[in-house]
Image 1 (cartoon, one colour):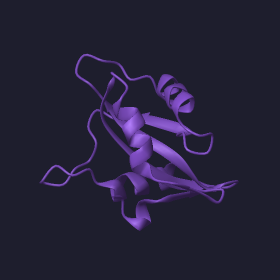
Image 2 (tube, rainbow, N blue to C red):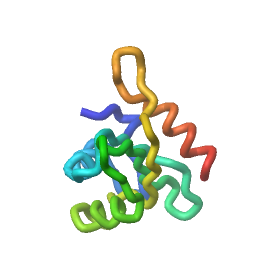
Image 3 (cartoon, helix red, strand yellow):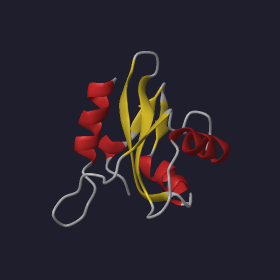
Image 4 (cartoon, rainbow, N blue to C red):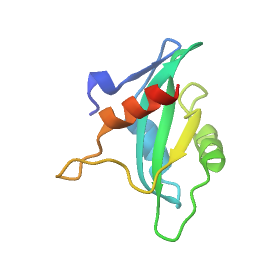
Length: 108
């Protein structure tokens, strides 16, 4: 279960990152995925995904957004996808969402 602070409040709708990540993980080009809420002027917060590609695959952000759009409700799909070679992790291998959240806030 996600932590309460990880929940994204997009224009009054609640989005659990895990639900979006599960859809991203079902795409063959995705090795790792993390979803965070980033500030949005209109919606308050919006969904942003960070992915690292599977070996030998090329993850196209527009294709991943379209893939999620087909499988998720309109308020849940990520508006932007950023492809990184590696997602930041702790020593034990857990993805550091706070670093991704901070990165997303800088870009907003």
